Length: 347
Image 1 (cartoon, rainbow, N blue to C red):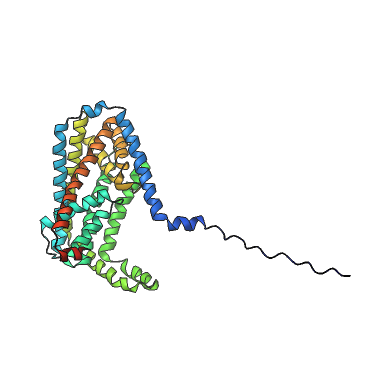
Image 2: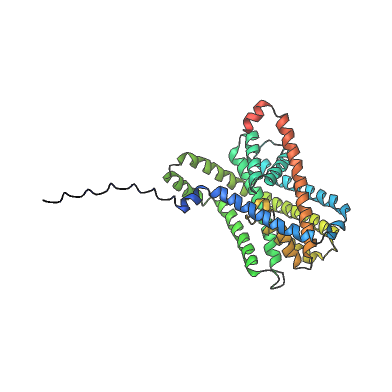
C-alpha cells in the first residue's frame, strides 16, 4: 500500500510590502518642509523671547518716541522700492501709474508677511500687473529683476563690508557663503541677459512633452533680455536700491538707539548688512526667528547685549507687520471696490 501524496498547504498571501519611506517623504515633501520651517520659526522665536523676558527692564526703558520715525523711514524705503519697480514698468510701456504700483507693492508685502513663503508677495505683484496689462512676460520679468536687483545690492553690501571686518569676528564660512552668493547673483544676471539657458531648457521641455510651455519661456527670456539691456535703467535701479537699504538701516539704527546706547556707525553698518543677508536663509517662515537670532549674534559681535539686540529685533518685526497692514488695507479696498470684470481678470 503506497502512501498518497500529501497535499501541500495553499500558499499564503503575503502582506503587501510597506510603502517605502522615501516615496512617502517625496509625496509629503511640501508639507514636511512647511512644518519644518514652522518648527524652526517657533523654536528660534521662543529663544529670543526668553532672552528678552529675562531682562524685562529693557522693554521698559525703550525711548518709544523714536519708533514712529523709524517706521516712517521704512515706509519711505518702500516708496523708493516701488519707484525702482516703476522704472521697468515704464520701460515696457505698461500703462500703470506709480500710485497703482505702490499699492501693489504694499499688497505684495502683506502677502509676503502672512503667507508661509518669502516669494508669495512677488507672485501677487506679477499676477496683479499681468491682469491689469495683459503682458504676462513683461510683468513677470519686471518683478523678477526688481527683486533680484534689490537682493543683489543687499548681498553685495554684506560681501563688501565683510572684507573690512576684523579677522575672526565673523565665521569665515559665513563670509565665504556671502561672497559666493554675490558672485552667483552677478553671473545669473549675465546669463539672463544673454539668454544662454533658454535653448537647453526648451530642449528639455520638448523632451518631457511640455512643448506648450516653450513659447512662454522664450517670451519671458525676451522680456528679461529687454529689461537687462538698458544699462542706464539698471544704474538707476542700483542707486535706488542703495537708498532703500540706507533708509532701512537708518530705521534699524533709530530703534537700536531707542533701546540702548548707540554704537558707532562704522561697527553698526557691516553687522546690519550681514543680518540682512542672513534673513535670506530659507529655513523659517518669513525669516521669523532667523532674523531675530541674527540680530542677537551679529550685534553681539560689536558689544550689544543679547537682551538689547532681541528687543531691537522684536520692535523691527512689529514695524514690518505694521507696514504690511497697510498692504492689507489696500487689498481689502481693491477687493470691495473692484468691478466684476476686474475680479474676473484677477482670478
